Length: 156
Image (cartoon, rainbow, N blue to C red; front, top):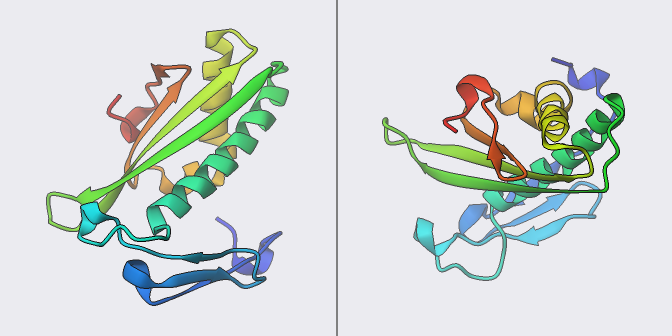
């Protein structure tokens, strides 16, 4: 764990109006998005994004970078790589909202065993999103269609 004072990069975003009809903007103005509540959660499904989509996008971008680093670490040549992150929100047994995450990694180039190793290294050692959510939610990691047994984090 790092302290904010020791961070190499710091950014912030501010939300006004909340998930139903709000807006989120980054401190540098590069990200400005309208928020809209999905109809599945009782909203009108209007124009705008939601926190789950923003989390999925951030996690996908971060995990992709971690896969590239992991591939270099094990000297695997990547032909292509695509990371899709699916985020679900629902109520847990206590009636409170929780998230579930599925990371689908398509890693072309190395054989399947090496691709699995690359994804495991990315998840366990390199991706700060993976570390942040570890043991806090149900996570499924799938490499080229093959679910990985990643411990308590996954039901796959």
